[in-house]
Length: 414
Image (cartoon, rainbow, N blue to C red; front, side, top):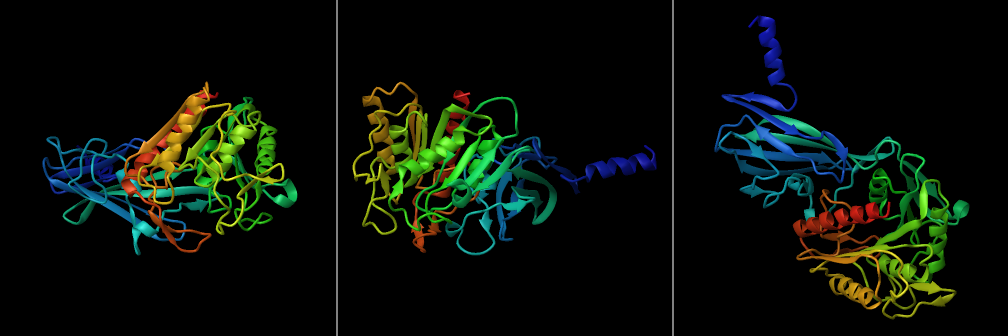
């Protein structure tokens, strides 16, 4: 080999993702370096000495500039390899076989990880997370690569709506334009108020589904409290969504979490011509009082308070998915999810309806997987930390199962 050829070969070995370490030529590979944030990536380490411990880690910086970090230790196999999809760590930030464990198990650089959640940075108006993956031996990093996780694919657009201009407050997120009509989602949150789920909206639009993420209290031009919110406000939002280019008005579903599921279920039953199915995360099956002061009605219909009764489902005209955890410490979402399915059965609902109840999960089961989320977070309305129940690992399992079924439901409506 000539000197130039040898230099070229050496440069290839030491390119990003690989390193020379003694007799090892360590390489970390990823099948997709740039991907949507809800897509699993597959990480493999090769070039290790067989049957030796190795540390694999991940690090990322959140919207506030705080660094998050996680790492686990593996033992290389007979061929000096570690496949994160099949290898079980001997210790570290997550336990058990989990190819995406490094992503959701990262911890913040300071403070209690159970009291914090990772919020991605925004670049050019689009949420994105750069995750550095590294391999260490004896405390020294010997290989690395970077995974870019995106929430908005090319062509996805977002439009802010205001009560003054649109008689709605929220955000409309549309997929890349084409000549087709697509199932769409009316999305809103729970007792946190405001526009609650921009990351969820962006991901759904990236999968081809138009989304109206609407606020109904605790936002400009709207009531400060969850009190006397007209169901007709949501119906108007659904009508607005129906009129958007690319929306199939025959296949608009409503999606919400926690207290918002009361409205979602009421809408599905009261306005079956507008809404054709529901996704309910940590649901309630009955109407609760106003919030945060429980001294009035949360919802109104035709100008009258909606009574604190079980919510009827007799007129629901579409599929229903409910996701709950067995360890929800805010309210009985597990029993509510099961009750909703039982009532749909009794009503002879002809559409698919399913409850996913994840053992050990808590209240935080809404949205897409693979981000670090604490379980004892400060509530933006009550101003103090609440224990939402569950563990990070069990909540992650609920997020994966629920999100997968959301995409299945929407795909079935195409």
